[in-house]
Length: 327
Image 1 (cartoon, rainbow, N blue to C red):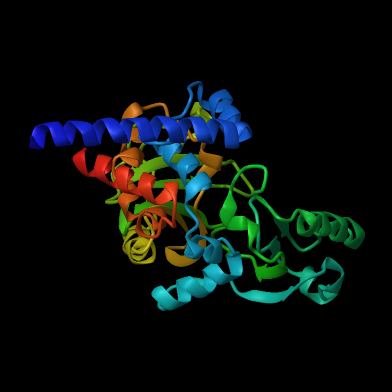
Image 2 (image 1 turned 60 degrees about the horizontal axis):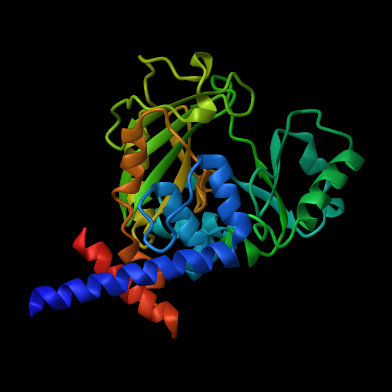
């Protein structure tokens, strides 16, 4: 009797996952089509297994307000300060809602102009930056890109109020720019770090490391050529292990987050937090690297499972939790 009951439950779950796939394909055809074109296979949305499928699932189902809060880059700075008060972040010199309001004297030094929402909205200014009209036009175009993430399904950005801010550039006489340390964390467990040197001034090189600092064999496909990879004998910044410890604390309430740090002369600075890494289309040369990201991501820790709402979503959350508990 118990075996029959388990079999019936499994069959009901399988039908539910098939129905969710069908619903997702009809309700979000653009997201599914982009996924297929980028990765070459149709995603399992109802019962996601791979890392990229889980990012797609998050886009469609997870409405964790903490994701929305921390997608705001200035709010993320506050979160770094709250959870890891010993950690510095780049100094914010000014913030506002219009590019025209940025004081001219602030733009004379080495600074970075950013917006609070979206990805890639950064303008690095050395002693002599672009003319003011060009800067204003570019930044106001960024600010007008709202709600960001609507077409890509990146819900967390859609509630972020667009603001522009200027922060002091992290650089020194010995190091022109910091090394970026991007930790993939799962409910407080850092698993992997993408280390990028020369991201701004070049040459841009990257390597993948385990959370304890071991070099991994996989390479992101967007850093595929040999001259884009860090040398095999690359020495990690001394603050790498401190960054891993901070990533564990910062990522504890989140089923998955990529937490970025900046290392300048072995001094660690908090950066940003990303929830839809590379839009959910990241690929690696080594399948084991992809499994490192897929296996530890337990959707039972997601907000959707803990607060699924009503109707069919509640039923689906129950079946999904049961299926994940069996694996």
